[in-house]
Amino acid sequence: MDVSETCIGCGSCVPYCPMEAISVGSEKAEIDQDKCVECNACLRSQACPTDSLLEPELQWPRSVRRVFSDPAPQHGLTGIPGRGTEEMKTNDVTGRYQLGDAGFVLDIGRPGIGTRLRDVETIYKRLVALGAHFEEQNPLTSLLKDKRGSEFKAEVLNEKVLSIIIEFKVSSHRLQEVLEELQRCASEIETVFSLGLIDRVSGNGSMENCGKARQLGYHPSINAKVNIGIGRPLAKP
Amino acid sequence: MTHSLHREGSRENLSNDFTIYCLPAVGINDKDSGSKRWRFLEIALRNHAANAGQADIGNMIAHSPQELSERVRDRFKKSAGDGVGDGMAPCICFARKEDFVNTLKEAVEADLGLSIVVQGILEEVESCLREVGLKPHTVHHSLGVWGRTEKLPGKEILEITTMCGHGMTSPNLVKKCIEEVISGKTTPREAAELLARPCICGIFNPNRAEALLKRIVSKSKQP
Image (cartoon, rainbow over all chains, first blue to last red; front, side, top):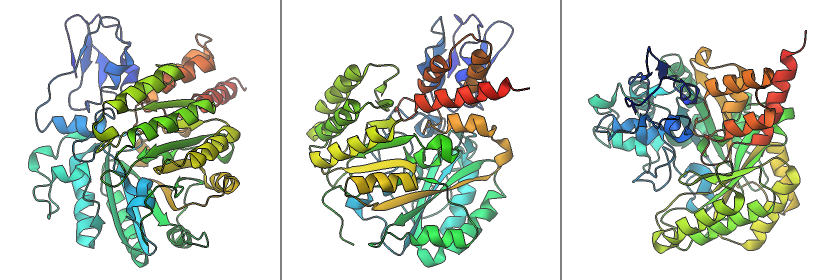
């Protein structure tokens, strides 16, 4: 994001930036381009009385920031906005997660810290080494040097984004192994991630993965996201 | 939308906060799904949604419910194959359980054939689903925030900012609103709507934000 010469330095835009990238200098607002993730929250706020915020044409690799930070545009690969995937949202139809699977969704950089892509690569490499099965239709794959590898393109590593999602699954019996690896990753990165665990619910209502996580000493939140199973055609088990 | 399960809060302040959205599985049932997604939005708006929106259109703070509905309808009319390859989904939140349950009932009766995803306190969601003869198919649990959690803002700020699934409601905007409510410059409702405005997909619950702000302000006045 840029600031034009028409800025009067009123500071109205400052609080709207989730990354604290805007400050007011001696005469006008200044944007710390390293902190700015091109999410366009400031522009959409319409807080500026002089229309002085300018959305630039972004070139690679900076364009990566907008892809993973601005929720408005649809992603060319997934057809859905921002950096998300369908994950369990359409599981009644896709059958992506079955009984016996443990699905994981890491929302890296959330809530509200943002992340450098080098931290995302750190986690991704460890999960690849673990043999995790990744969701292919994920915008993250566009960052890889080679789709079958785990290294990111070098030029993106220092780019900062609001958040990136890593979605993968393993067999439920490997739940503990994955959680322990994620704990190690968490101690090595400079950001945070919100961790989600997916359960295909059994016929008797039991949720194997949630139960195992509790036994291991983890504390699933009282609130959860639920696919209610009325999508059609229903995926075969 | 991915982040809706991570809404922070206590049992007490999460109990009147439900979110819901309807979407196709792209490549499987997305043909003719655009108009169905619009019909779903209509059902939710009829049942007193606290907020609603779609990421490429905006929310109920920026548009009236009727305007939002018309924009979503027109958007999907222009979509190839009435929604083919298009994963956009209207998002809705409710501040009252009965409105959420009524929306579920009507959505089930409408038999749209698209996936519906809800969020709330799991026991309450399960209870609501039982009322309409349903059970959870797949559940996404939150195991919380890991990593450099010392960099996070305080709990009271997070309870508000995490309602925006895309991180658009900034902690500094919340702090500014708190100051302005305390000083009397704005009301809790006005501040709540200001905080809901950046959340373009409409999943931010302004009623809950208003209640949270009132609680924060009330605590600030205690000796």
